Image (cartoon, rainbow, N blue to C red; front, top):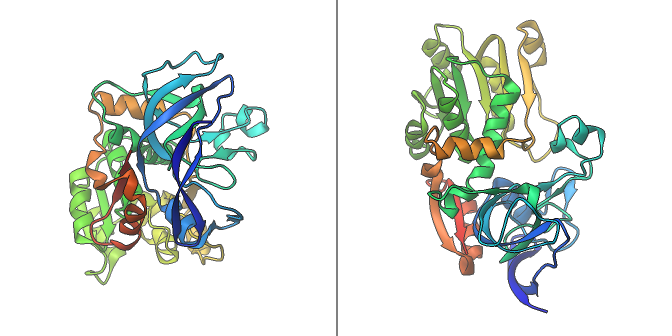
Length: 347
């Protein structure tokens, strides 16, 4: 049986390079040779804590779900891709039969098999067998690294869809990490008016400008953040707010940054429940809250936006490491809070 190399987390903060069998194909699957993988915040949580909320690792796991690669073999039922195709992988396999799948909300499928989430191994390995309907052909001019950035971009597109963002509206995006920057770029592509980026890192705020923010605020340098946002938005606050930090303080603060009747979308993931929220204030001001978990049917749209130059997500790529140094790549992503945004592993 042919072997491949895979990086496996075998204990908290431990990654080991192992040999494993190359996956065998089911009829509707293609064998994808992974070429590039981005490190997500969830990957870091699983490596460091071995859990996210109720999702707990009980055995070793291959991490990773942001990836692109090349089709090297196809099963007999595969019709959408062929050997040699360069593809982006949508990393969640839904059952297709439950009430959520049938209503189009397959991201909520209770039987979802998601790459790099227990018990499903991820893409930090040389080959992955995956259903062909979750493989999307990349334009010829797109690099594998750009392809691996598609997955976090789809999270931002899903957030705009759920918030029912309106053309020319103002928005405040709190957090200028990967998801925050992707959200800024999605807002720009959607025709936003004023886009205000809030963070404490000057490097990331500069990056926010490059991604489409019209204004930036270093919240560590101002005493009245809500007042600053109101001053930029006719004294009212933003029409839409997007929380992209996953911090208790910013979850609570979002209501103070938006106007009455506004929509707040919570995208950052808190590691535990129990956070206080200003619900009386929110009810009295008719503030609407949305949450986002992954995406539904947006990978093709994301590829189209990039192909026709309507969006450019490449600037978030800050560091690159070879597959042989995946452990060092994770260390960089988890410890470099100054200028590490999206750390990419190249196979």
